[in-house]
Length: 125
Image (tube, rainbow, N blue to C red; front, side):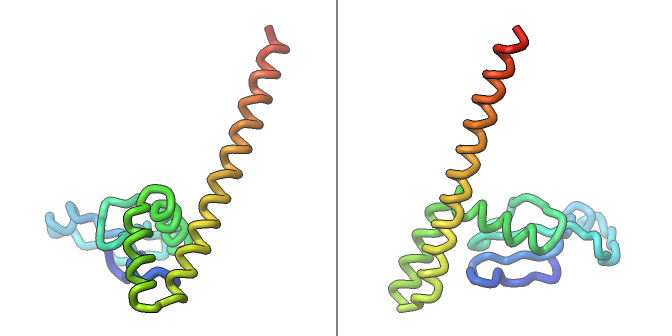
């Protein structure tokens, strides 16, 4: 990654412009552009999706953190409480609630779509 930036609330998330390591290893250098893809790391772990811009990198990192990495959420919540960093602890709790609500809403919409599809399918038979 280049132009690495820290997540606005979570210091263990970094976002930056994606750098193709294969191209680098082959000595291919390309100048940065406004259309460069972005990526992110969570707690130093690589291998996360490439997205179109910084805002999407931040959102995607949060979604991955709260939906796929409860171990990291728990780790940094405990660290924050231990260090009396209540701002970080509260930010983690608030965003966890947000992403749980997003998941609930997605499930509700999926159920509505499945029910509508079943109803429409029965009308076409």
